[in-house]
Length: 477
Image 1: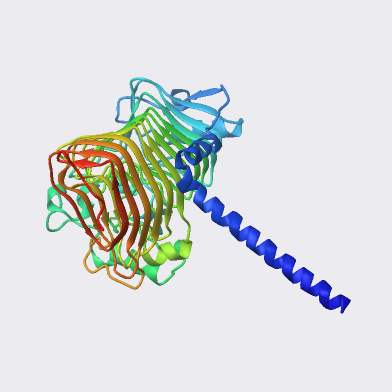
Image 2: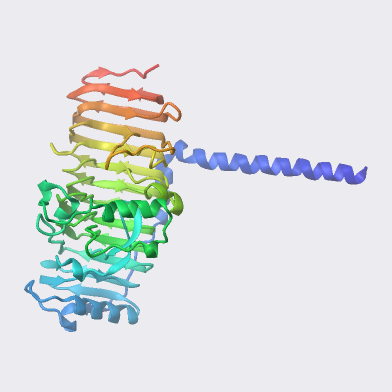
């Protein structure tokens, strides 16, 4: 009898403990919704910004020659090697034009461009060796990004100089296969079945990444700056122009700060900044003028995204200017691993060539979940299509349907002013089986917009103190 009572007591205690843990877990989840901007501040405090020794290593002292004619790859390699071997510091690029192939950073190295410095990157694809990278959300072995770091810590690219990818309709861009970017019959492009399609299939078939060999002849353009599996990284103040593909790409990285950077690049897929599978990323004081999304948060694509199964989370965007682009701050379409806790504040967005302010896009082949998106204090001059666009039927490269219904919940816009809202204030389309849930517009003013909203399969959408075209908008019932 004593043992039975004792066992009952233990069982009751276990139940209480489980209930307590469950309550704590639920409370933790609700904390973000209850006070998102406090959570944002906590994230900011946790992000480690790299610090470097005062020692400097001028690339000229390692044989670099300005003028934009001599290839200075070896000088960059030697300077970076000396820097990291001696405990780190700054690798200095002085005023002048310096041509080079890809630059691979190492631990404790700050690549610093002085005012008047310009790094010109080679347009010869053969100069870019195979490395572990990614193309449109699928991992592979492909051409090295122009600036690359793999599994490094405490790294940076800083200074007032220019990073020039030299991409144009004759170099890199035509690889996309579009005539507007220089492609014509007889030129290779990514759409050959042996190129991009083969890569996507390798992801679906779970081929080991090391066996997904692309590079020369595959026409998959490299990213400009990629920090892959890195911790404590910084990009500050530089101007980046003429990128082959995605511009700034933190990949599987933690504690990344992008501060005061200007991106001007209008080529195909020229997203300004694409955090992917990354955590604790701060993008601030930047200007984006791009050929694709200004900022696009990603987490892998389709089968390969399900293999990696890693969220992008704790992404902060603040005090930025978005000009041309498909979207100001975008989540997707490569979002299979999920996106969580995105904070956007004090940004300005304005251009006749800016399609949307906030955009979320996926489809039933991608799947994935986007949850907890908080936007406040945004000024929008002009957008073409919509202020908020949520599209769960995003279609590119043909049929993109499957059995993985994407989910979106908790999207909160507050204190947003729009002068010219384009076609829709809110344009959202979800699935009947899994509707978009909990969309809130609070203290939002949108003028010169065609229609207040067009929604399908959206639950719990609220308009609180929101006016569109001068009239207060009531929440749909």
